[in-house]
Amino acid sequence: MTGEAPVDVSDNLDPTLKKTTAGYKPGEKKSIQEYARLDAQDESLRRWKESLGITDDAAGAINPNAPKLTIHSLMLESPQLPGGSVGIHLDQPGQLEELAKSPLQITEGIEYSVVIKFSVGREVLSGLKYLQVIKRAGVPVDRLEEMIGSFPPRSEPYVKRFAPSVAPSGFLARSGTNSVRTRIVDDDGSVFADFSWAFKLVKA
Image (tube, rainbow, N blue to C red; front, side, top):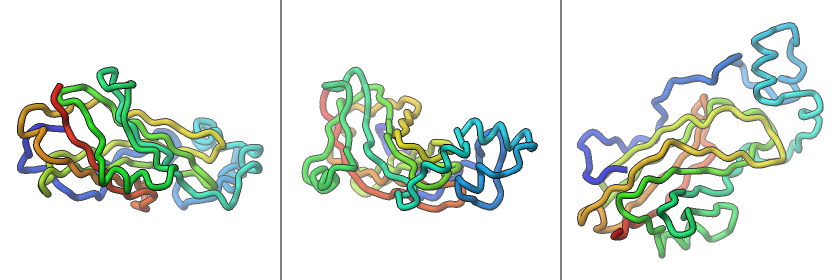
C-alpha cells in the first residue's frame, strides 16, 4: 500500500504476470485422475506430479462434487496489530456485508502480510494468481499481483503468505475508507474468486 495515489496505478484486475509454474507445464487441462495415469516414463512429468502430490491414491480420494476452489479467509497479519491479525472469514455467512458497515482497521505505517487460506476441490488448479486493487475516494492508489502457484485437490486447506507490505501513514492516508477488490484467477484467466472489502487506517 502507498500513501499517495501514483498516477500510473491501474484498476485493471486482469493478470499481467507471465510467470509459469516450475517443472512440467501441462497443455490441455486434465482431471487429477487423468494426470495420475499419464506416462510415468516422462521424467519432467513425473517430477511435476510428485511436486503436486498427484498419485493414484490421491486421485481416487477426490470428491467429484467439491468446489474447484474455496477461499476460507483473507487475513492481514502483523505483530503490530492487536492479536497479530485482522481479516475476513469468507466461509462465515455475512462477513462481507458486515465489513461494508464496519471496515477492518489497520494501524498506519505498520508492516503486514496478506495471508489467504483456501481449499482445492476436484481438480488440479495451475498458475493461480492473486490480484488486488485498492481505491481511496474512487481513485486507484495501489495494485497487487502475486503468484499463488499450482495445487492439487486435498482435504487439508492450503495457506499462502505474500511478501510484506507497509501501510501508508499521515493525515491523508487516514482520511476516508479504502475500498479493495480482490480476485483470484488461474493461468487461463478463469476467475475463481472475486469479492470486495474495505479497511480504514488508524493513528499509531
